[in-house]
Image (cartoon, rainbow, N blue to C red; front, top):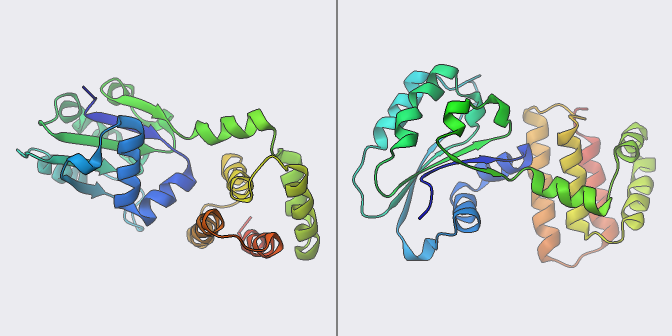
Length: 237
Protein backbone atom coordinates (compact mmCIF):
# COMPACT_ATOMS: atom_id res chain seq x y z
CA UNK A 1 0.00 0.00 0.00
CA UNK A 2 1.35 3.46 -0.86
CA UNK A 3 0.30 7.02 -0.22
CA UNK A 4 -1.59 8.69 -3.04
CA UNK A 5 -0.55 12.24 -2.14
CA UNK A 6 3.18 12.89 -2.00
CA UNK A 7 5.35 15.96 -1.48
CA UNK A 8 8.93 15.99 -2.74
CA UNK A 9 11.20 18.73 -1.41
CA UNK A 10 13.83 19.13 -4.11
CA UNK A 11 16.57 21.56 -5.13
CA UNK A 12 16.20 24.25 -7.78
CA UNK A 13 18.46 22.20 -10.03
CA UNK A 14 16.03 19.28 -9.64
CA UNK A 15 13.13 21.54 -10.66
CA UNK A 16 14.99 22.47 -13.83
CA UNK A 17 15.64 18.80 -14.56
CA UNK A 18 11.96 17.99 -14.05
CA UNK A 19 10.83 20.76 -16.38
CA UNK A 20 13.36 19.71 -19.03
CA UNK A 21 12.25 16.08 -19.17
CA UNK A 22 8.92 15.79 -17.38
CA UNK A 23 7.82 12.25 -18.22
CA UNK A 24 11.16 10.58 -17.61
CA UNK A 25 11.79 12.49 -14.37
CA UNK A 26 8.30 11.71 -13.01
CA UNK A 27 8.83 8.02 -13.82
CA UNK A 28 12.13 8.09 -11.93
CA UNK A 29 10.61 9.65 -8.81
CA UNK A 30 7.75 7.14 -8.81
CA UNK A 31 10.09 4.15 -9.19
CA UNK A 32 12.67 5.36 -6.67
CA UNK A 33 10.49 6.70 -3.87
CA UNK A 34 7.13 4.94 -4.30
CA UNK A 35 8.67 1.71 -5.58
CA UNK A 36 5.97 1.27 -8.18
CA UNK A 37 6.96 -0.70 -11.25
CA UNK A 38 6.01 1.69 -14.06
CA UNK A 39 6.37 -1.07 -16.65
CA UNK A 40 3.44 -2.93 -15.08
CA UNK A 41 0.96 -0.07 -15.31
CA UNK A 42 -0.34 2.34 -17.90
CA UNK A 43 0.80 5.70 -16.54
CA UNK A 44 -0.89 8.94 -17.56
CA UNK A 45 0.05 12.38 -16.31
CA UNK A 46 -1.45 15.83 -15.98
CA UNK A 47 1.14 18.53 -15.21
CA UNK A 48 0.55 21.94 -13.66
CA UNK A 49 3.40 24.35 -14.31
CA UNK A 50 3.90 28.03 -13.53
CA UNK A 51 3.73 30.15 -16.69
CA UNK A 52 6.80 32.36 -17.11
CA UNK A 53 4.69 35.53 -16.72
CA UNK A 54 3.00 34.33 -13.50
CA UNK A 55 4.21 35.12 -9.99
CA UNK A 56 1.94 32.51 -8.35
CA UNK A 57 -0.74 29.93 -9.04
CA UNK A 58 -4.16 31.02 -7.84
CA UNK A 59 -7.37 29.26 -6.96
CA UNK A 60 -8.95 29.52 -10.42
CA UNK A 61 -6.08 27.66 -12.10
CA UNK A 62 -5.84 25.02 -9.38
CA UNK A 63 -9.62 24.45 -9.45
CA UNK A 64 -9.46 23.39 -13.10
CA UNK A 65 -6.63 21.04 -12.20
CA UNK A 66 -8.57 19.53 -9.28
CA UNK A 67 -11.66 18.94 -11.42
CA UNK A 68 -9.57 16.85 -13.81
CA UNK A 69 -8.65 14.52 -10.95
CA UNK A 70 -12.21 13.32 -10.45
CA UNK A 71 -11.82 10.55 -12.96
CA UNK A 72 -12.45 6.84 -12.89
CA UNK A 73 -9.52 5.08 -14.46
CA UNK A 74 -8.24 1.52 -14.54
CA UNK A 75 -4.72 2.85 -15.17
CA UNK A 76 -2.53 4.92 -12.86
CA UNK A 77 -3.06 8.65 -13.34
CA UNK A 78 -0.56 11.17 -11.96
CA UNK A 79 -1.41 14.78 -11.19
CA UNK A 80 1.85 16.68 -10.84
CA UNK A 81 2.32 20.19 -9.46
CA UNK A 82 5.79 21.65 -10.00
CA UNK A 83 6.71 24.69 -7.82
CA UNK A 84 3.94 23.86 -5.34
CA UNK A 85 5.30 26.44 -2.89
CA UNK A 86 4.19 29.29 -5.16
CA UNK A 87 0.51 28.30 -4.89
CA UNK A 88 -1.44 30.95 -3.01
CA UNK A 89 -2.75 30.06 0.44
CA UNK A 90 -6.29 29.89 -0.98
CA UNK A 91 -5.15 27.55 -3.76
CA UNK A 92 -3.44 25.25 -1.24
CA UNK A 93 -6.55 25.23 0.96
CA UNK A 94 -8.67 24.22 -2.03
CA UNK A 95 -6.59 21.05 -2.46
CA UNK A 96 -7.01 19.70 1.07
CA UNK A 97 -10.04 17.52 0.39
CA UNK A 98 -8.73 15.95 -2.81
CA UNK A 99 -5.30 15.29 -1.24
CA UNK A 100 -6.94 13.55 1.72
CA UNK A 101 -9.32 11.44 -0.37
CA UNK A 102 -8.04 11.12 -3.94
CA UNK A 103 -9.84 8.96 -6.46
CA UNK A 104 -8.73 5.36 -6.85
CA UNK A 105 -5.63 4.96 -9.09
CA UNK A 106 -4.87 8.69 -8.81
CA UNK A 107 -1.53 10.02 -7.53
CA UNK A 108 -0.79 13.61 -6.54
CA UNK A 109 2.92 14.45 -6.81
CA UNK A 110 3.77 17.88 -5.41
CA UNK A 111 7.28 19.30 -5.89
CA UNK A 112 8.62 22.19 -3.83
CA UNK A 113 11.99 23.83 -3.22
CA UNK A 114 10.78 25.33 0.07
CA UNK A 115 8.74 23.10 2.34
CA UNK A 116 8.21 25.99 4.76
CA UNK A 117 5.94 27.61 2.15
CA UNK A 118 3.63 24.59 2.13
CA UNK A 119 0.73 24.70 4.59
CA UNK A 120 0.94 22.30 7.55
CA UNK A 121 -2.56 21.07 6.70
CA UNK A 122 -1.30 20.09 3.24
CA UNK A 123 1.81 18.37 4.62
CA UNK A 124 -0.26 16.40 7.12
CA UNK A 125 -2.23 14.85 4.26
CA UNK A 126 0.84 13.79 2.27
CA UNK A 127 3.85 11.54 2.50
CA UNK A 128 7.02 13.66 2.56
CA UNK A 129 10.32 12.95 0.83
CA UNK A 130 13.21 15.33 1.59
CA UNK A 131 15.09 14.79 -1.67
CA UNK A 132 17.02 18.09 -1.72
CA UNK A 133 19.17 17.10 1.24
CA UNK A 134 20.49 13.86 -0.23
CA UNK A 135 23.28 15.45 -2.28
CA UNK A 136 24.12 17.99 0.45
CA UNK A 137 24.53 15.20 3.02
CA UNK A 138 26.86 13.33 0.71
CA UNK A 139 28.93 16.45 0.09
CA UNK A 140 29.20 17.31 3.79
CA UNK A 141 30.18 13.76 4.68
CA UNK A 142 32.93 13.61 2.07
CA UNK A 143 34.03 17.24 2.62
CA UNK A 144 34.27 17.62 -1.14
CA UNK A 145 33.93 21.39 -1.34
CA UNK A 146 33.72 24.35 1.01
CA UNK A 147 32.14 27.77 0.62
CA UNK A 148 35.32 29.91 1.05
CA UNK A 149 36.98 28.08 -1.86
CA UNK A 150 34.00 28.74 -4.14
CA UNK A 151 33.74 32.38 -3.07
CA UNK A 152 37.45 32.81 -3.83
CA UNK A 153 36.93 31.19 -7.23
CA UNK A 154 34.12 33.64 -8.08
CA UNK A 155 36.37 36.65 -7.37
CA UNK A 156 39.05 35.57 -9.83
CA UNK A 157 39.29 36.52 -13.50
CA UNK A 158 38.40 34.02 -16.22
CA UNK A 159 41.89 32.50 -16.73
CA UNK A 160 42.75 32.29 -13.02
CA UNK A 161 39.36 30.69 -12.38
CA UNK A 162 40.22 27.76 -14.61
CA UNK A 163 43.53 27.14 -12.80
CA UNK A 164 41.86 27.37 -9.41
CA UNK A 165 38.98 25.13 -10.55
CA UNK A 166 41.44 22.46 -11.68
CA UNK A 167 43.20 22.60 -8.32
CA UNK A 168 39.86 22.31 -6.49
CA UNK A 169 38.99 19.18 -8.44
CA UNK A 170 42.41 17.59 -7.92
CA UNK A 171 42.25 18.14 -4.15
CA UNK A 172 38.86 16.39 -4.16
CA UNK A 173 40.14 13.25 -5.85
CA UNK A 174 37.50 11.09 -4.17
CA UNK A 175 34.83 12.71 -6.37
CA UNK A 176 33.96 11.88 -9.95
CA UNK A 177 33.97 14.86 -12.30
CA UNK A 178 30.18 14.81 -12.71
CA UNK A 179 29.67 14.67 -8.91
CA UNK A 180 32.22 17.45 -8.41
CA UNK A 181 30.44 19.75 -10.89
CA UNK A 182 26.99 18.89 -9.58
CA UNK A 183 28.08 19.56 -6.00
CA UNK A 184 29.59 22.87 -7.11
CA UNK A 185 26.24 23.85 -8.68
CA UNK A 186 24.38 22.69 -5.58
CA UNK A 187 26.43 25.02 -3.39
CA UNK A 188 25.88 27.96 -5.73
CA UNK A 189 22.13 27.40 -5.40
CA UNK A 190 22.10 26.53 -1.71
CA UNK A 191 23.90 29.72 -0.70
CA UNK A 192 22.27 31.89 -3.40
CA UNK A 193 25.60 32.98 -4.86
CA UNK A 194 23.96 33.98 -8.14
CA UNK A 195 20.65 35.34 -9.39
CA UNK A 196 18.02 32.80 -10.40
CA UNK A 197 16.87 34.42 -13.62
CA UNK A 198 16.12 33.36 -17.21
CA UNK A 199 19.73 33.70 -18.39
CA UNK A 200 21.04 31.63 -15.50
CA UNK A 201 18.35 28.98 -15.93
CA UNK A 202 19.54 28.56 -19.52
CA UNK A 203 23.16 28.24 -18.37
CA UNK A 204 22.24 25.78 -15.62
CA UNK A 205 20.37 23.79 -18.23
CA UNK A 206 23.64 23.56 -20.19
CA UNK A 207 25.50 22.58 -17.02
CA UNK A 208 23.04 19.72 -16.48
CA UNK A 209 23.62 18.61 -20.06
CA UNK A 210 27.34 18.72 -19.34
CA UNK A 211 26.93 16.50 -16.27
CA UNK A 212 24.85 14.00 -18.25
CA UNK A 213 27.43 14.01 -21.05
CA UNK A 214 30.32 13.45 -18.64
CA UNK A 215 28.52 10.46 -17.13
CA UNK A 216 28.30 8.77 -20.54
CA UNK A 217 31.54 9.76 -22.22
CA UNK A 218 35.27 9.61 -21.62
CA UNK A 219 36.68 12.93 -22.76
CA UNK A 220 39.46 15.27 -21.69
CA UNK A 221 39.16 16.51 -18.10
CA UNK A 222 40.61 19.84 -19.18
CA UNK A 223 37.97 20.24 -21.89
CA UNK A 224 35.10 19.69 -19.44
CA UNK A 225 36.54 22.02 -16.81
CA UNK A 226 37.12 24.75 -19.39
CA UNK A 227 33.51 24.51 -20.61
CA UNK A 228 32.19 24.44 -17.05
CA UNK A 229 34.32 27.49 -16.22
CA UNK A 230 32.93 29.30 -19.28
CA UNK A 231 29.31 28.62 -18.26
CA UNK A 232 29.80 29.67 -14.63
CA UNK A 233 31.72 32.79 -15.71
CA UNK A 234 28.64 33.90 -17.64
CA UNK A 235 26.24 33.49 -14.73
CA UNK A 236 24.74 36.75 -13.46
CA UNK A 237 26.26 36.76 -9.98
